[in-house]
Image (cartoon, rainbow, N blue to C red; front, side, top):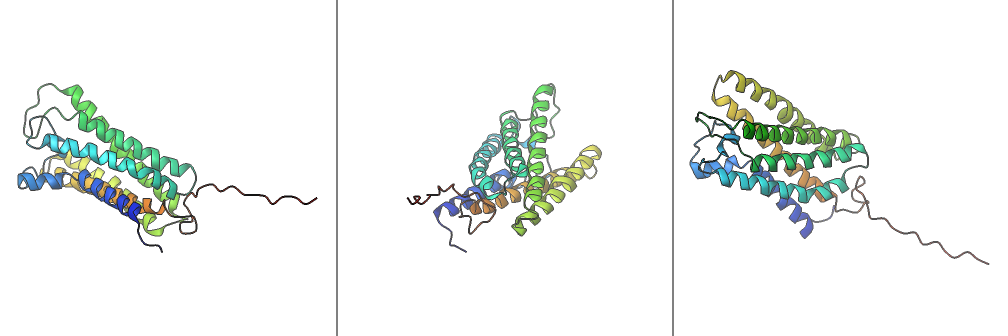
Length: 234
């Protein structure tokens, strides 16, 4: 196994920063002393909220950083349809997340919202499309690597899909409908978000393999080499 070079470190730092920024509610807590711990994160980004601009800007920066990882993620994945699903699902995730940041919810928590139905519909639709696409990509990553490996990546995809993509989504939907207990909505959503952050970091670690020669990373694409034919005798 070769040592990490500057390019590898850059990818890992890029992934770590993107993962932290996607779970930007953690940074928000340090600024608000844990106010809004149980509120829906999207409502904290509404106009008029104390750290709304901070949260929206960090969402967009996260999207840019994730996009920087994708060429190497694609190179490290085995060739085939599932590779393209992983990449393009992640692209849709980024577009949806950026759209939701540019079009926030109309009203914050504990505010009686009058109007803003179209704005809320755009925001909610973008958020749902973003998260759904991300977890479709997670499932595709498992399908792409379950036989070829690396084993850790396939296992991570499997667990993140079921815990973050299925279980927490169902819990969030249930608690949002019942509002009992009220705090569970925000908590289940935050677990869902943290799972996405973990996946982003997994992509960064996996992307490092995209920079390795084929001898070190059997599933990665290698640069095409021209074969020089010896001159024929005569």
